[in-house]
Length: 263
Image (tube, rainbow, N blue to C red; front, side, top):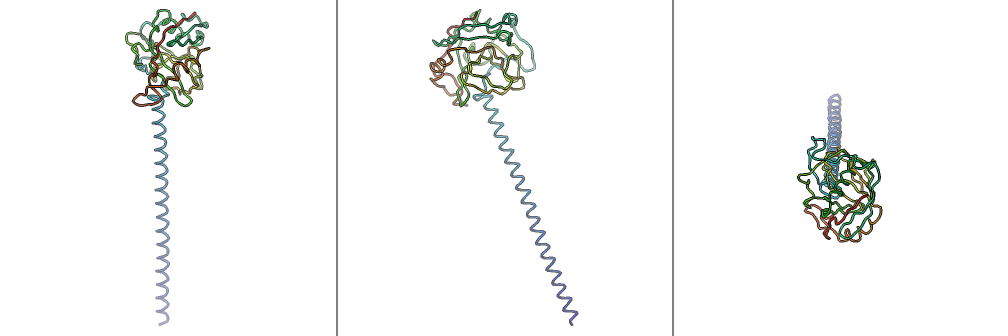
């Protein structure tokens, strides 16, 4: 009889040990699943954050304030000059000085023909043949720590200029992507070093513009005086917002190139 009771007790104890073991296993399995779920959630959150950051950056530098180059004139595969591009020898490898007048606002400018011979030659030819006279400054971008005005579009729409040329390569672009106040640079199409044209932009607030796969933007010179007048007379008027941005659009004060001289 005692042996039977011992067997029953041992059986109960064995069942209790099995129950506790199964309970522990269940808790362990639940914790593993929970950790896996939490890890997946964390990874998913990081993916979403990274995606949003990438989309924001792409918008900023394609449609937003970081996109000073609406000239998609030549396919990226072309990678060569198109049309009657002036010889880089025209720049003579020297410094050129002159005046750039937007509306009635006069700025003194200096162009570096040694650092950017091809781009400076193109700009000089545009001055000499009167191409820039009367062309509009169709685009104004103003945001925190970023500011530029873009000029020289033939039709005032900022698209590629028909019946003209496109050239490269990119010259004198800043290695750190920082375009300092007063910088004058040539606008171009995205990811194409040979899509420079007649359009240029003037930076009136230190601006970081990340390089794309082609590089940065050809810096031809600087505004040596008058940048404050540009801000007071034109920039302060504000922006006509575009469909996609309140910081990137046309100037409220219609602006055009009324005079350019160079020597």
